[in-house]
Length: 415
Image 1 (cartoon, rainbow, N blue to C red):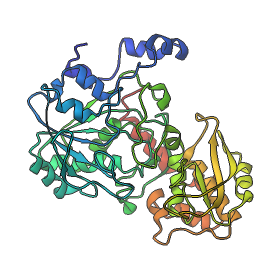
Image 2 (cartoon, rainbow, N blue to C red):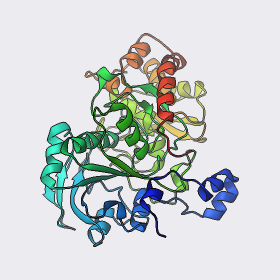
Image 3 (tube, helix red, strand yellow):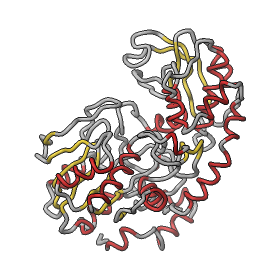
């Protein structure tokens, strides 16, 4: 299939739009399990013409794979039609050897011989200097996101866009699905004074966008000087789609994101990083298992009593192999999502925080108020401490969420 640059960058229309308008079952039958094509698949099908004559640097990690799980860096390096000269690794590294809060540093990739530069916790001129040192003309981003504001890869995207503009480089985003769908944004919006690497700009906690849509939003709303930006859209993705409809393999984007089901709950249960309870790191079900020593069946009973849509809570006991409570048996809950379309991860996370505090006298926030950085303000912590119930906390951010949704709407490219 011969795709022009215009067709790569344009919104899906014509036959694709007609297919989307058909009944979901018949549309799925016609298009088959591999109806979705990622940005990389469309770029490669066009012979990399968007990158013709450019010295290319890739920002990617283990999720940058083809449908048959070959890494795109390996594929591009072996293809004479593209001039790949450098790789830039985010948190956890390009090949994924580092745990949370770590990276791989600067090295030459044994498989390709390409220089790999470390972008983790680098921004501004320092990151621009790395792009200059790498002697690239175009920086290409291809990383699988999970849909939560505090997942750091979207801020690697943001920082690389800022740095590319400073260094005078073009920036290209190869799009991939939001695995928890793009139906809507949920949760509190970051207050700018709480900007960190787990949230640079005021977007919702569950943003409901793809990385290419976020790049458009960043360029249009937040970058002081917009970067020269191109995006290669997916074809065949609809906003209501979850990851299992994509036909794509799931490669864990980070060590504690083993399945799409983890991503489904993450935007809410990651809030337990801001407490003294385990968020399930060191188990086979991170972010689905939550608990601490001394927690008992009362928490699950209280959580179920909230009647939260689409989810049940089971009394659970587990022994983390690392992180909080390493090697010790703790009690808590396991989330069982039975209706993912009705499920609201952020509201569920708030409900679990409220009921944990009310049923376990040992509950405490982390002393560095990490919860404020995750939620984007002091509001969640102070309201829960003041005795607010879950509905009151959720109601408190609805005004700012509505304002974000209105801005977000202008940057959505899939309908």
